[in-house]
Amino acid sequence: MIRFVTPFALSALIALPAFAGAYQDAEAQLRKAYGAYRAALFLSNQGKQAETKAALDRFVGEWQTLSNEWTASPPPQYADDAVLGATFDKVSELAAKAEEEVAAGNLPEAHETLEGVRESIGDLHLRNGVVGFSDRMNAYHAEMEKVLARDYVGMGGEGARQLIADASLLSYLAAQVVKHPAPEADADMSYQKLVDGFAVSVAFFYDAAMAGDMERAMEMRNALKASYAQLFAKFG
Image (cartoon, rainbow, N blue to C red; front, side, top):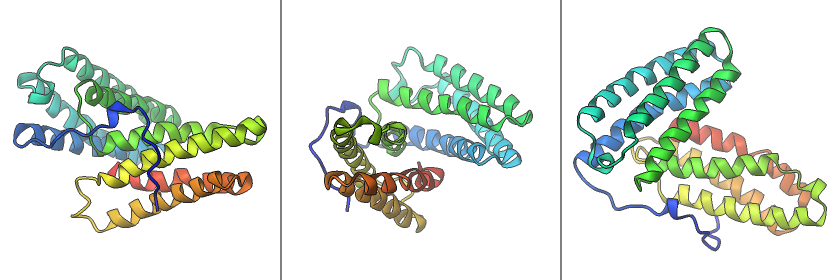
């Protein structure tokens, strides 16, 4: 379904061994807070003000608890992070700004503000050598956005070559997501359906690109965001 292409030099996607105890507990706590954040991000993009506020309120509360506990006793994987406190402050500032924007009914602005939270938490993992499901989803998302924005047809002959390169990278990043399931995968029956839909959309795009069928590739490109968004909203 998803093809493994020649690996790219993406050292941030190298998985670390799993550690027990405090390490896993901290990542579970962070993932719980991130789940509330993820809901706020998704709902703000849907223009749902009340639902976004509720999700954002949950995130703010969980982030404050996490911040207080980690400041007092940092988890082992972040014990040497000199800017851990700055990350707490940055995310809190972004969340507060998003709260104001949501209250004013400015959902698009709130969505853009909340994107910064994803970047801050991603940077926290990256600089401390931690890789989880959400990091792989975010790596895919970053490249997907480039694919969605690129005018392959207008690039002429170069467009076909760029399309193949982009489809190959997207296929590789999607394969990393599929290969390393979300922590909740075994406990939630909806996971397999969503990840299969995600994988199929990337495979169709990849197949069209490799076949040199620009029209078909552009058609398949239109399905990438929806399948990603469905997986991201619940598990990303």
